[in-house]
Each structure stands twice: as C-alpha cells, then as structure tokens.
Image (cartoon, rainbow, N blue to C red; front, side):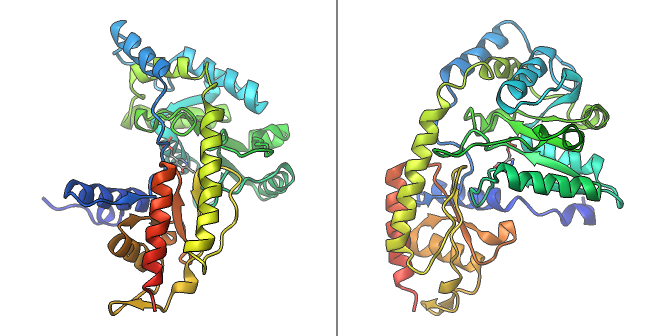
Length: 348
Ligand SMILES: Cc1ncc(COP(=O)(O)O)c(C=O)c1O
C-alpha cells in the first residue's frame, strides 16, 4: 500500500524525534544523558492518580460530551477566573488531547488564506523568556488592529522564577479577550504529560467550531482522565517546590556553561525549564575529520562524542542554538555539562 504524497511531507516533531533516538540508543544499552525532554521529571501527584482510580471504580468509562464533562469545564472556568482574571463559561471551553492538539485544531479551523494567527508562547519554549504586561499589551493591540487572532499558549504559566509575574493576554480588555484563544493544560503544571489533558478557552463560535471538528476525529479525551483532572485543578500546592528546583537547575546550568561552553551565550530564562544557548561560535571547528556546520551537526556531535542528547535549535527555526532541558536531576545536568565540555574541548 502506498502513502499519499501529502502524508509523506509530514515530518515528525523534531524534539520527539530526538527523544525517540535517545530511547533507541538506551534500549541498546548505551548510557545517554538526555537534556531533551520537555516534561517534568517529577511524578504525577498521588491524589491525581487516586482520583483516576476512583473514577475507574465508579465506571466513568463511557463516552462524554465532546467539549469535556461539565464539572471539568466548570473547574477550568474557576481556575481561569482565580488565577488569570478571565471570565469564561463552560460553553467557551473545550478539553483537548493535550495543549498541542488545541493549538493545531485552532489553526485548522481559524486560519484561512485571509486570516492570520499569531501564536504567542509565554513563557517561551525554547528560550524561557517571559513577556511583561507592557510587551504583551503592545503585541495584542497590534494584532487587534491588524485583524490578527492571538493564540496564547500559556502551558508554562506556573513555571516562572522568583519575582516574575505571569499575566494572561486575554485579561487586558474586552476587545483583546474577544480576539484571543487561550491554550493551557495540565502536562507541565501537574506533571501529567502522558495523560493528554489540555484545553482551549475563547469566543463561543470558535470553541463550537473546534468541538464540531473534534467530534469527528477524537470524540473527547479519555473519560476517567477528565474526572481526575477535576481533582487536579483543585490543588496546586506542590507546584512552588518544583519551580524552586527548576530555577536552581537553571542557575547551576548557566554557571557550568561558563566553564564548559565558553563560546556560548544565552538569555537567562525567566521560566519554563529550558536554556537555549548559542553554539555558532563552534561552527567551522572539526573533530575526527567531521566539521560542525550547524545545530544538527552539533547535536549529533554531542550525542556521539559526549553521549549527551540535546535538541538542535533548527527545530525552533534558530540554527545558531541548541536547546537544553533541565527537567532532569542536578546530578545528570552536572555530569552532562562536564561531558559536553570535554567533547567541545576536542573541537579544533
Ligand atoms: C509551548 C508548548 N505548548 C504546548 C506543548 C504541548 O503540551 P501538551 O502535552 O499539553 O500537548 C508543549 C510541550 O512541550 C510546549 O512546549
């Protein structure tokens, strides 16, 4: 059987592709330090797992509403009001298979040849930069004036470091609220990457269109995951401890980079769990007859010469950089940076 041409043109997510390679190497017994993954290394809290088990015992295993069960959409509305100053009603919410699906579904439904969309990811993956209120206001007003819809991907909103304050774009004015689709989920804040729970909040007609679309290809997300998510949204007391750990790891990495990656520069992240250093000053240098010409060469070199996996910046359209994730233990980070340092030292 042949695949259609358009299907062949779809390439895998670059970060998931690197992760796949790491898993393959590990399964062959190779010891790889992975600074790739975009998922918390902390486990899903027990109370959320117990809520899923309870839901299963209660036989919450049948079809639900496409947009998600009402108690979950109510819990999301309460969260958006409490934490983000946003007033939504359940009909303006759709629960999706992770935030990723909410983003692609929006594009599918909203973007036409005439409509333009700005995807604003704050705090940012891969840089960790957090936009402040003035910057966001300028961006969102500019979009409004140009008739550009804002998709605000706020998946890392809870992971912001000391002294910084996250604000939701849609909270600025009624006009901006009506021009914004807010995307979020529990993957990063509640360590629930594999549960696939995300959501979108926005104007009723857009959410309705997304729901119609979702009804055909997904129906809805897993029923007992929805019930567990209602409980998850009631408790965020464990988050600050994780954020402190991420910040400590970021600070340690930046210090170690001065020693082990002396030709690199990076913006100090305000949040999320990534660092995005430049590596282009190493381009043109060689080891064992191989010359590093771009971020893919660099990531390949680090994997082969240091057994450390990183994501090439090209995956984010920035070929001068690589992305390091600190969603792993301090020991792994220290070990990984030292190995990167040894490998870079071989480049002549
Ligand atoms: C900016 C951003 N948005 C969305 C996602 C996907 O989140 P989810 O697991 O909810 O699909 C990620 C995951 O890495 C991300 O970095």
